[in-house]
Length: 241
Image (cartoon, rainbow, N blue to C red):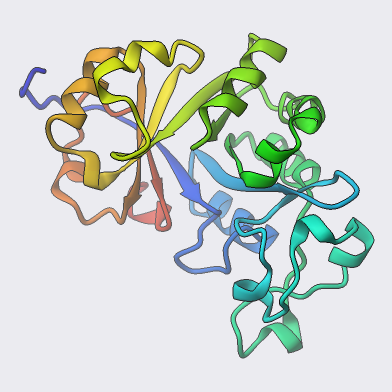
């Protein structure tokens, strides 16, 4: 891998919206990301019991609502009645959990790129993948990401034109054989993997590389090398000054 650092202009994806200042995966966080001139939004998708794709990171609602229920056990009409947010304000002015369709429509209206992470309930119900892909493709700047390579393989078989990106981990990825992930166009990875041997292997793969976990204060974000295609950050404003 070349060690020559040249300036590049990576896209800036607001992680779960502008989640550094707003509650994650809410329309408020997405609207704030647009106001801060993010290039795109990264969000998470789970499935309700009746198969509605909704934007929420955890299947278990306890962390975000204080309610010990699972998204996958609730019908959408029940989920609509759940308030989410920080512990001390959600009872007064909590947020609702957006549908994927709502979020995609907003991104298309604001001309924002979209990174849709497919979560475990999607992997458990691959028969719902077509529905998610059809919603996603309202946008012409969308890619699907997941830690589950098989759900991405199914997505690519179902819709070859859609872009996919594998979320890679040290313990989950076959680093000696990255070429086997021929069904993805990109790798999305935590900034902890910005070191050898992981970085060199990913750069040599020729795929798009997007880094999450960055705050905008890291040296590499101030002078990004040419192999970085995107930042996924809670603080998009720090990258858009």
